[in-house]
Length: 473
Image (cartoon, rainbow, N blue to C red; front, side, top):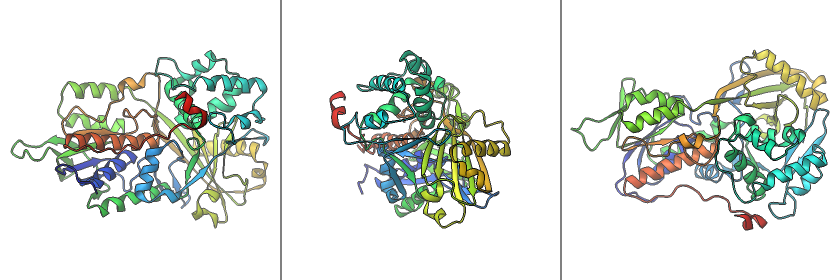
């Protein structure tokens, strides 16, 4: 363990990925860490629970990562959880009627490694393939700047066909960024395509957890306890106040009900709306006024997960992208998670990203819609019996990665000395992803260590470009 210069007591507020990564990094470097989380579990939006209507443990939504997520992978390494991620180097796109397109790397060097699969893809016509190649070439040398232009306008400007948009750009991007094309920054759209399809085969691999998310991130509690840290669940924070000048060695007092937690430093690893709720308890200054104004400009985008249990297997696929439908992704949990393999029912999770149209719909309406559409891809659904079902609407699933959002994303330093900000919405250079959450936690830990007189680096280097992409970088 590397000792810091004068270890401090640090309170991390928020047990999502941002808070967990900050807490684990700081605990590793000798700080006295206390983690406060209002829920009875850690993981934040990446969590699981026993659904009361089905009696099954389900994830609040399916979460995936790509090989480019080096800091998230580093967190898994810290927690000893790498063996709980299943990796795939292919994507199966299915059209209504069942026709399949398989996108996977070949022997060709990056950025050409997926070109053979695109050439052979039945989901695209010749003109679609030329349009996609033309669009992808714009990301060879760099990721675009964050301008006023949205990605729908960018696609039109780059001559993309309707089918190329519907069968490639839209399903990939809406799933990755959880927003509609006309509300997506071209910077983060470009980042998704450059790093998933061009940079290297390893960067574009998809990882899927093989255990419930709370099992995956719950390991962080043991990790922190083993390093002498405290973890307080079911602990909501009502206020953060500067300590009385009579105790200069203590910087802040955190109030939770009738309990108080004194701390030298604080990491606020909260959602933007939760942080906005705490601002009135903190000292007002010019920086806090600007932060409040910036937080008010963030918006949410929803995700809906539809969990279905059938009395027989409806597909042998482990995952698939579903085209030309409301439902967008299929994850076969009976194959992905060992805990479900011995169950009699075939457990399928469907995901609808940017699911604004589903938010006002009733549970049964959503299930009926999912069953109708699923049968268009897998006719065996018509002969299977639906044993049980659950619908989970995450209305605040992610923040909306709108154009020009970067100008209001704050860094790890806050307007108050000894307080640091973390969260996927902060200035990480990534959109609303698990990787962004972990990066923000590591950045907050670096800033805190720097102010404590130590030079600690927690961020893990990006994957280097491979093949011919080294010439473009």
